[in-house]
Length: 77
Image (cartoon, rainbow, N blue to C red):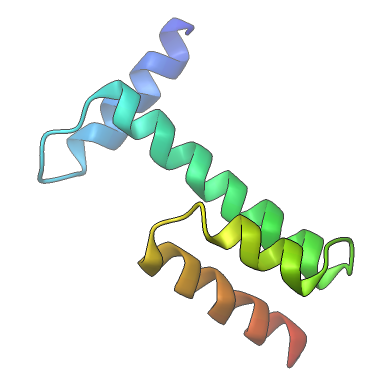
C-alpha cells in the first residue's frame, strides 16, 4: 500500500473507539464496496433476487439489513 493509503487508514482507525488493525479496516472497506455493488447491480436489474440474497449472505447481518433498506428506498423513489 502507498503512504497515502496507509495515512488514510490511520485517520479512519483514529475515528474508531476500538483498536482495529489495518487488515480489519481493509476488510470492512471491501464489505462496504461489496454491499454497494450488490445494491446498484440489483437496482439496475443486473442480478436476480437469488443473486442478491447470495451476495448478502457474505455480509454481517446488520450490513445485509442496511443494504436491503437502501435498496428498498432506491426502488420506492
